[in-house]
Amino acid sequence: MPSIKEILTKSANRLRKVARSPRKEASTLLAHSLHVSDIWLISHDDKIIEVPKDFEEFIKKREAEYPLEYIIQRTSFYGKDFYTDERVLIPRPETEILIDKVICTCKDLKSPTIAEIGTGSGIISIMLALLLPNAKIIATDISKDALEVAKINAKEQGVLEKIKFINCNLFDGVNQDIDVIVSNPPYIKKDEKLEKNLSYEPDLALFGGEKGDEILKQIIDIAIKKRVSILACEMGYDQKEKITNHLKNYNLKAEFYKDLAGIDRGFVINQKYKGAI
Ligand SMILES: C[S@@+](CC[C@H](N)C(=O)[O-])C[C@H]1O[C@@H](n2cnc3c(N)ncnc32)[C@H](O)[C@@H]1O
Image (cartoon, rainbow, N blue to C red):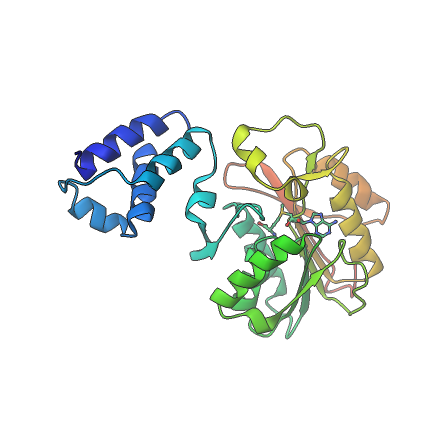
């Protein structure tokens, strides 16, 4: 029988083609399979064990580019650990910037009502509930399945009572006054050829229409109709011009921001001193 060290070396070699940190992923998967911590594995790496059957399955799935986060059903986001499964988009690190933008823009509002459109795993609304304790938060999603995941996460983070979850298209039927709209909507165009790992994530979370920017534009239209003060959205790397042109119809300008890779990633429209967008 092999030692833990030998299992990890062999599995890391198998993951080399698909994983950025193959050794770390092999270790995370073995720890998950054995219900031990990564540190326990390191300190017991000479231990001889039988290769667990589910671990072999996990490695096979990863070789087929199935996301690690769906296997272990956890994702780290904004320094917290969230439940994740195939019903929702895996939270991306760049979405942390969107949260920072909202916090920064809202910090002088006393008790804003914030609406998130397309909450998915709930990470944005949950972080806002934690970081802006006086905010009232409404989170919508067209997917009932996604809302179930969001509620699991809200409960784990102790903010289930602070967020009103609504299953609807965009913001249909929600008649409350809103100060801030935030969204990381689906923004990929319908026929775009995606990397294989993305094919495991829900289509509803990825594709924003024929051109990709249709839902983003609808969200801008909702923000204007609702006369909100602040709109903050994530967007695709090639959508800055299209958003700018759409905003010209309303005589509005957005402040665009880039992600850590220097790629255009989102925008904020802040009209709080003018009353409304
Ligand atoms: C890109 S994911 C974002 C999930 C999460 N907010 C995040 O940042 O990780 C987009 C989410 O929007 C939801 N969605 C797609 N179309 C929608 C619509 N018309 N109305 C409401 N939600 C929608 C999807 O189900 C998905 O959960």
